[in-house]
Picture 1 (cartoon, rainbow, N blue to C red):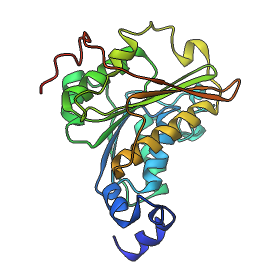
Picture 2 (cartoon, helix red, strand yellow):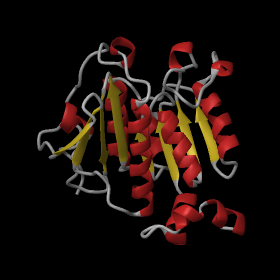
Picture 3 (cartoon, rainbow, N blue to C red):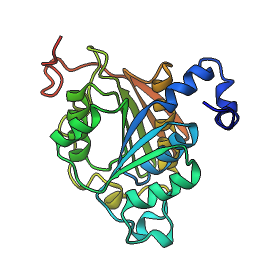
Picture 4 (cartoon, one colour):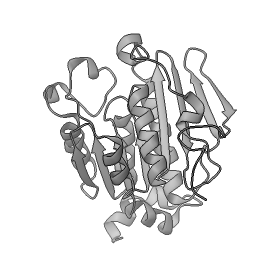
Amino acid sequence: MDDAELLRYSRQIMLPGVGVEGQQRLQEAHAVIMGLGGLGSPVAAYLAAAGVGRLTLVDPDHVEVTNLQRQILHTDADIGRDKVESAARRIAAMNPNCRVETRAERLDVAAMTTLFAEADVVLDGTDNFASRGAINRAAFASGTPLVSGAVIRFEGQLTTFDYRDPEAACYHCLYGEGGGDEDTCAANGVLASLPGVIGSLQATEALKLLIGLPTLSGRLLIVDATRMQFREIRLRRDPGCPVCAQRPA
């Protein structure tokens, strides 16, 4: 890092457990962000601001006016644009040292597995069980840690599935096949600020993981915004899980 970068990240470098070595790890890291909506917006913004060197943004959708209530990387001027294009423009203005790559397409499990194998962490900001299940299968197949967040109405959830750990549970262990298309923000609504809360926590998990600090692996954090309560439950691997039960030694 040069002097300008040391100054830029100085407030982070001074933290115990980070230092110059931790900041260097961030600079050399590659994070894949799946979905650039309510969760992906704060995730991308904070990873870029913190100095993660390479971000790959994946989202097949375009910006719509209904997104603007919570998807803070996008503005009225971006309506109709690819979300990844809109997000990449904002990130470039925020931190020109961050290398941004975009994929404005819907990837299948095989393509995601190939992409994730090149990354140090995957962050899931999608809003339906089918996408989350596919992302989980690809992250497990590639052995890439997955930071998973979800929001709906006034509730949010967050955990890290660290597939470097042979005993780690996976997303399917927790949710099985999940729910239907009705279990989305589009069908049920969501408080504008809540994706910002969970997305910021996802970014925090990813930064800690990349630096080498402890994460939520093995625990699920549940946020109830109506009561402003945070509670935690333990996650255990399902020995009969069709995704992760037959993992290699």
